[in-house]
Image (cartoon, rainbow, N blue to C red; front, side, top):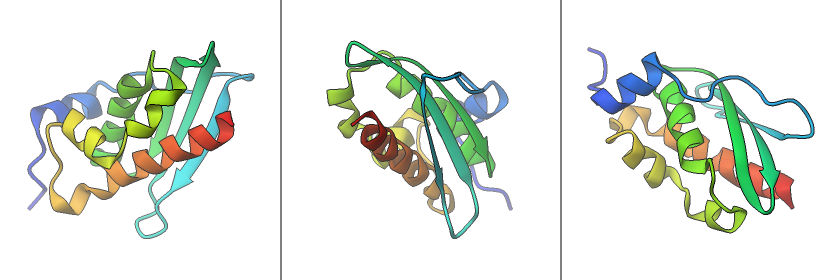
Length: 121
């Protein structure tokens, strides 16, 4: 039986926001869940200390694709100083929840935010 996904999650999966990749000089980071093999790649244009544009590419389950899409909406326009508050719970909330077996998708997003902050220095 498939997991019970929210309408918000299904909308992000069916109509992903900000998919693709930004060209250099945008920062690009990639994180992977070694257990399930899901991969999330983020590219972000940073200007004046804030995320101006952001794109994602995801290879994985329905929840990972939807979470990547939701993450871009959480990141866009935010100052770098506010990104640390974007954790797995924030991504899960943006999707109106995740079933327990899909929570790894939100963790993958949180890992991507941490990687982006490291890359931004």
